[in-house]
Image (cartoon, rainbow, N blue to C red):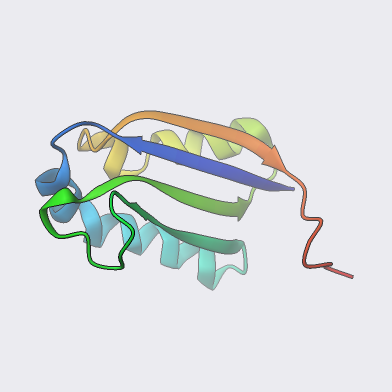
Length: 102
């Protein structure tokens, strides 16, 4: 099943985000290589691709896991969580409606 992981950044965590980014991307690449990643990306604090020092307010990931518990465990082990980038993380089952997957 697909799961939505929404990580919300802690205030002032941009430097931590930059430092943990290579490890974070490596984990996402593992999901992608396994065919389990639908989408992933940051949420800029400003309406631009390059928010500069304003940074980001969080990240969104939609990926396939065997269970909600597995998705939560994966999210809790994320380098952004370990580095204190995220102040909170939400994990929910997600059903694709559009575009149609069939």
